[in-house]
Length: 447
Ligand code: HEM
Image 1 (cartoon, rainbow, N blue to C red):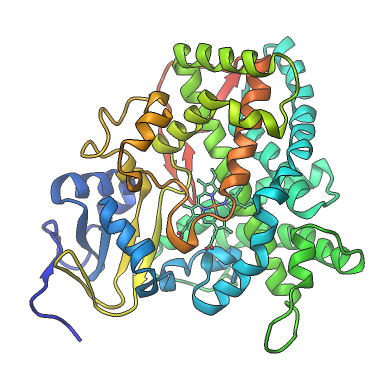
Image 2 (spheres, rainbow, N blue to C red):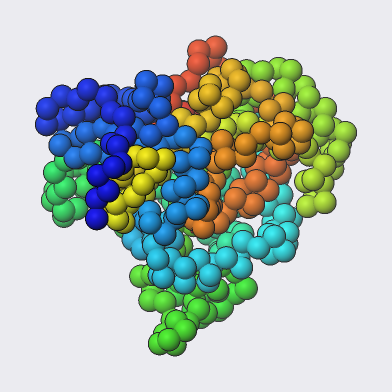
């Protein structure tokens, strides 16, 4: 039922047929920023004769993700992700999503996470042994690579108690990187060919997917033989309330790949941007090191130290504001919807991007400036909390947000206890928006 009293959302002038495809393929985030600046917090635009919406006003985002979430599903918006993640949690809706979320949630409860702090610090410690060599040799290294291998090791150990070799961690990291870029490329193709079609990109992706499966399926077989008290154990133990059946290996594979993927790339990218921003802001670096020295001196941090690392947490929050790794996600309107007098027709795909809201001068003073003081308890409590959503909001809010915060706090604390990573270039590093918001050309640093 279309309500004719509703107005269409503001929209830019559009070319016939192709609409904004040139802008979208040239600089998608720039296009989203311009659309919001010129037309406001709800905009509709065309791509190949189809209408899409961009929603960035915090009240509207809240309407879609929280207050009216039943009317906005993931639907078609996650089709490209299925190539890699199948029916994993971030690609699911409705009853199936709820069932899977309930199974996995206990692995992320605070109490469960609190037992993981020591595992995480042991892994960080091991990685930093190699950094002593980098430091002595003044070796230049890629921070994104380092953080990817660190966060991948952390996710594998904390969620799956898995025994995986260094070489396998490297293969997983490389395969995920290729898959991440491939998914973005695939989402921009207007003709969707099957993966069996022998395009070079398809061949490379199929090879990467095989690497992933060849690591994950043996993990599942091992988990069935020797059940552990970890996320894999929970997935394998779960029974459908009605049928009493457990999950198939294929569904368990999708959830494992999802947790590997969603659980490492996001934190790795956030940490990479953190080192970038801190190295460019010496006063922040001094204050951070001051806090870490005062709270820990050279002691390995424990769970009890985390609430005392107040400035460290502010720095992380500000990094997630400027560079939200999950910078873009989407929903589909189930039926015609009304939002502040605007019509959102059934089936419309709606882009939601924390990046644009977090950079909008309507909500943030001097938004391009890196300023961890924005996140002092006083400043945080005195502003509208909906203007900041790096982990999403509502029932689909990131299941791993507490784990991610913990691993980022521990990593920054342990690194700045011993090292000062420095950029090897004075130039600003650009954005490479793929599945996550990567630095363009990597992040070369030395200690
Ligand atoms: C800095 C780190 C992270 C950021 C910025 C981040 C961001 C997000 C965002 C924005 C969403 C919501 C997407 C939507 O509404 O469609 C989400 C969902 C999700 N995240 Fe994260 N994430 C991070 C770390 C993690 C970690 C460490 C894990 C797992 C160990 C994880 C697993 C998931 C899963 C499974 C979902 C889907 C939740 C659901 O639909 O119920 N994420 N994440």
